[in-house]
Image 1 (cartoon, one colour):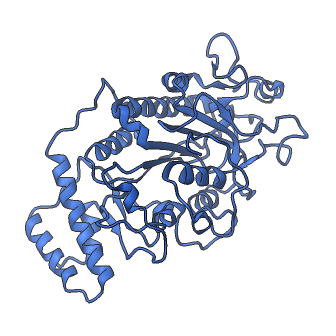
Image 2 (cartoon, helix red, strand yellow; image 1 turned 180 degrees about the vertical axis):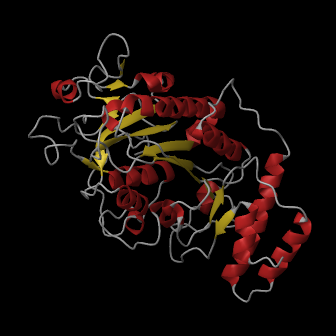
Image 3 (spheres, one colour; image 1 turned 45 degrees about the vertical axis):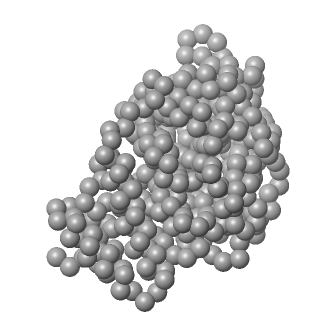
Length: 407
């Protein structure tokens, strides 16, 4: 079989996009010398998670009247877990209460996009490109951030998505690697010969960009093979759940502890589009998410000082339940931030209220914080990034919430 560059990467289970970094941006290499890189872990809850039942506005009297069957009670069986006397946490997220009490976890309510779309496809695209309302944008916000710096001897695993295809957020000119599974990745029979031929194929190319792409691909393979030589054992008694996020968070922890230079990690999981029987649908998803985040923080221990986890979903759901004990496509939503640099134990954001005249289009939680403001604050406060205008073209952040100690 004749192997093209595309077929080699696709059949081997590893996708890699790489070109030269954009010139003219500031270099952070000196700040990284002798230090572990800071890492941002982005988790996308695809399908529009119901933020009103994740971080519950128990104090808002309209909440329970809008949801006679779905409202999480303030007291009694199945009650929300009190966060601050006003908001509560869905009981399936009980494993996060320790992180909340340790002030390593915070929530942000009433966040989202200024664009009114209720299309999953468009809203996810707008969030990952960070250009609400603009179609045809070819690069993602995380990839744009990566072009802000030129790092000597940059790791080919600097940006990794635990996924089967490149997420929009990481598409663009900067290198990004897609791994379906770190631990099950294997080259096919005859791998040494294939790798040798692949190396020669790239080595003969006349352009530096293609040579760099080939070198990064081969070096990624070598790094992953080294990681696989030792079976991974989570530390500090951490036990990851056997769910879609549990396995992905374990792999991200594995890459972090291997010190491969990971700065951006991305993972996602679907199933959040809860039009019918919402509680039966999202309860196991929330338990998996909460248990996964708690295990990740326990596993990393002191390394969490250099890690920021950010959750997102394309939009929220209707304030009122529908006739099928579910909710429909909405607008405002909530996000979580987790890490050693988080000013945790707080719910951030301006609460707009759930009264008839307070709802967006008289049906949804209104957005009071643009999701780009949160992305920008994460990049500035966690990485010390500047040139934010290059990450969010045509947009200047409107507010700083102060959810990071360094912000």
